[in-house]
Structures are given as C-alpha cells and as structure tokens.
Length: 231
DNA sequence: AAAGGTACCAACCGCACGCCC
DNA sequence: TGGGCGTGCGGTTGGTACCTT
Image (cartoon, rainbow, N blue to C red):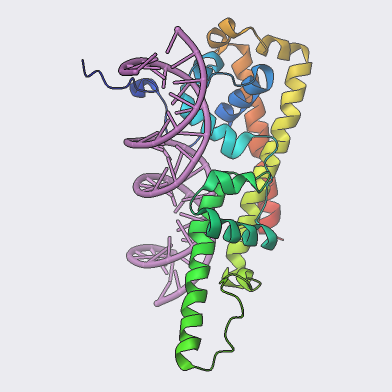
C-alpha cells in the first residue's frame, strides 16, 4: 500500500560528515579481516555508526589499498579527456581505464581542472579563428596540446596538493602497517573476532587499540605536513 | 592582519539497475 | 511477474585551505 522503498539505514542513528581516523581504521580493519560481502550490514558488524553506503564510498574512494595516490599525470589527464569525448559523464567507465583512480576522483578532476581548461582552450581557438590568423587546428580534437596545463595551477596550490597527497599516503601506509601488526599480534586476535562479536566489542580494548593507532597515524601525518611546509 | 573570494575535494543524496524470491 | 533489496552511479553540496585585496 504505497510503502515506498525502505531507507538504506536509520538516518537518525547514523553519523554523517568527515570520517575520523578511528572510523577509517575500524572500517579498514574490518574489511581486511572479513571482506565486504554486504555493505548494509557492514557498519553494524564493524561497530560503525555509519550508513553502509557511506562505508562503501569511503572504502572505494579513500581506503582501498590499490588506489593510486598523488596528482594526475599528463597522460592520465589526456586519457580522461579522450574518454570523456567518447563516453561522456560515464565516470565509472572512464575510471575503469585508469587503474587506481576512482570515478569520484576523476569527476572532481574533470569538474575542477579539465573542463575549465577545455573551455578556455575553445575560447582561445575561437578567438584565433575569428581573427583569421589561426594556423587552423589540424584535428578536431580540442585537447591535443594540454602540455601547459600545470601552468594554470599556481605554484602554491600545487604545493598544497602535494601536502594533501602526502597526507593521504602517510595515512594509508601507516594504516597498512598497523593493520598487519594488529592482525598478527596477540592483541589483534582480540580484534579479529567472529562477526557476531564485533559490534559488542566496539567499546572494548579493541577500540582503544584502534584509537591509539589512529593517533599515531595522525601524528605521522602532521610531521610530514610540517616538514613540507618549511622546506 | 583581516575579510571576502575562489578552488578543491570528500561526502551525501537520490535514482537506476540487476538480482533474488 | 512483480516487488523488495543491495549496490553502483552521477550530480550536487558543504567544509576547508589558499589567494587576493
């Protein structure tokens, strides 16, 4: 009788907004130990106050170990532009051609850099054509020379990207280290509990281990940030 | 030094699709 | 065959950092 679709989760009991290091760690550890067969039940089993969708997104866009970190290369940018010409806004399709990159990341790069660059280039081309002095573009592709792209970005901005990317890398590598130590150490076996025990353990020693590890990770990130800032 | 503007990106939202019963 | 459910996708937004005046 017109009962619409059930909500994916109880919104009132779900945390939103940026993920804390401890949450990241908990999600990472859970997936490391149990995989992700069911996103909807995962947050409950992992002791996270998050929507399954949110966990999935966080995993795919940030925590997945096979993610390539760092800025997009010229080659990657050109690939995106080419693929966008043929595929349109099919970000996941485009992402499948760029291993280690996520659809969200590609979408962001497109919206923030590449689209503007193409618009600017088109405008430049139009301007040249209208003046009739243009040594016409030999091909119809408007992206053939994107080599000046990095010049569009102010140096300081570029540095800030470096900082951010380094932050991600440090965070991830630290997490990976801690995960392996957790899963192999004796205290870790306390964390690698059977599913039914996990939610109950969320406030136990295990969570303290997670929080401590998260703090270590953040310290490491901040050190890296400072060293970059004052280089 | 402060305020306003801009760029960037992580995360959310709603819809669509496919699978299963 | 139709409805429910889980997942994936694309658009959009909000927060933060940086830049400019």
